[in-house]
View 1 (cartoon, rainbow, N blue to C red):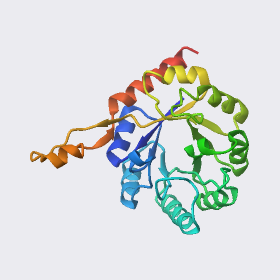
View 2 (view 1 turned 90 degrees about the vertical axis):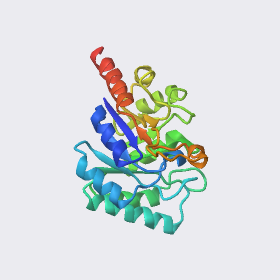
View 3 (view 1 turned 60 degrees about the horizontal axis):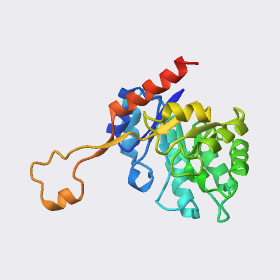
View 4 (view 1 turned 30 degrees about the vertical axis):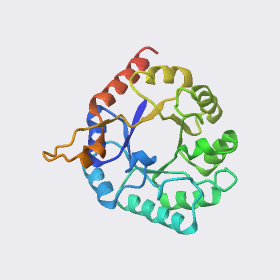
Length: 244
């Protein structure tokens, strides 16, 4: 079983590796649901990580109905990831009717070449998830990230199980949203999933000695993935595996 960490910085990516995660999804702006990180962040993460590195390709916050210019931006970001020797990319594109936009996804997958492709939680906003799942299998995506179309993966666990069974090993269905050490074991038992996604983030205090009121209002320090939270989830997954 694999734990993937949504890392909002190079520091978070290193925390994921130190905590025993099996894969990193590098992004920025987690408070907006995640956006594409900078070229420098991707390059530095690739230099420092020995675990697989996937990069979120999302040009803006909001919905997943993208213009031609936004799709070109995504394609160029994917080409950057390929040039930097990343292991995979993460994206999702829908049409105005709430279906997987197969044509645009196909173009992005072509740009990815040998890179792995994860379709992110845009899946949870599709009109018919079962049809969308089959579309992703036909497109050749290797996994889909989902909360079971609910606020948290635990709330959507029964649907996730159905999708795990429907995929029949042709694509990995990876639960994410609200996943932590306290529920990951239960989530695995209900869903039968083998890969899990979490951010394991913690607010770090600011190192600023001078802290005006404005800084305190901005919450000060950095939001970063936490090594101990990650270790707790890895331990919980290992315990589930050992009990089989």
